[in-house]
Length: 228
View 1 (cartoon, rainbow, N blue to C red):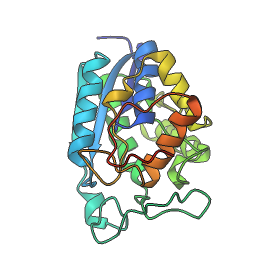
View 2: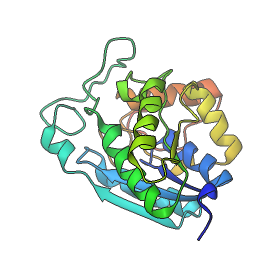
View 3: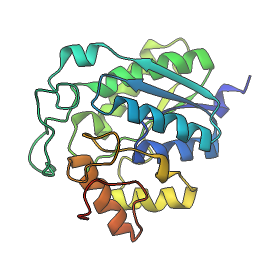
């Protein structure tokens, strides 16, 4: 087995940010990838992206789990079909309805448990604070607190969550991904569609703006020809 100091777990949703995180993790560690399905609208498409990215990055250790608590709880446009996904960027206008209540705590708990079993010392997550939708579980203080919980609640207390993208602008993340040869063509960020990205939800708009600011074309297909 690879020594714990050389192993990492990456939370890989299949989106742009998590893909860059996975590319970073595989550069520096023997990496295992975790994907959590939680009844989101694009669940099937995101899982396909996860598997494709793992293949491209040669990540062999994969774990796919399903969280049934989050869709049962609801309260988010991503898990409740009765709540419409907004088509106007909501950054700067409060926490949007696409926020899934305390979602990252559910994901991180699984990641920490798996890291203990694998003997991994790092958990990578692609949380981003600038140029984001303003989710409260993407703030630096959240991960500082979670690391204290891990230290207190695990056998060795030596697992650390790392958030290498958290202070970066989205365009900077695109540029970093290009440097790392991250497979952006395999990623999926749209909150609404599984065939062609809608181009108008929060996530699509932020992504399109990032690629435009980075001076490169977004390689995934969009339903609308309008570009931000």
